[in-house]
Length: 126
Image 1 (cartoon, rainbow, N blue to C red):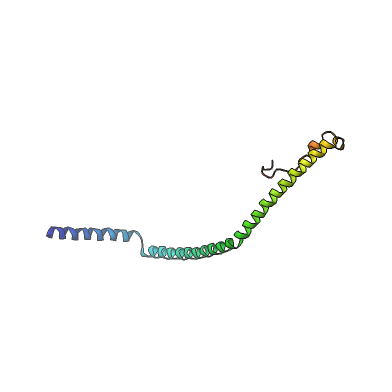
Image 2: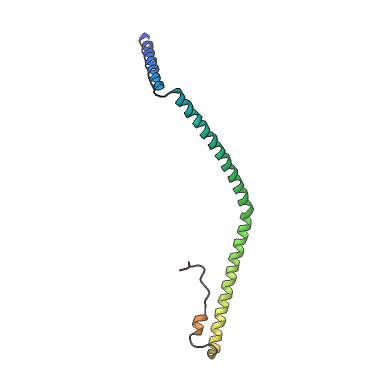
């Protein structure tokens, strides 16, 4: 048991010596300035965190306010697109029937040009 205690005191002495060597590498003034810089950075990070938390809460509130309106407007636009597609389909069929019934009413090639000049919104512009 005495050997164990002796080894423990030798280890403690060695640890104290190593700690003292590390302390002598950096001055207390440098350590103090590092601590001060760390506290300054911590304060800034806490402020940034508070601002970001507030912004996230505000964004969530704004999204909740506009999401239902956005969804209803999206449904309205889809409905309008379906209605317009139906109207253009009817117009094309009417033009075809007119061209078949009164072939002299349209000059040659005019029907092909005017049959559908509507841009296809599903495809990207070139």
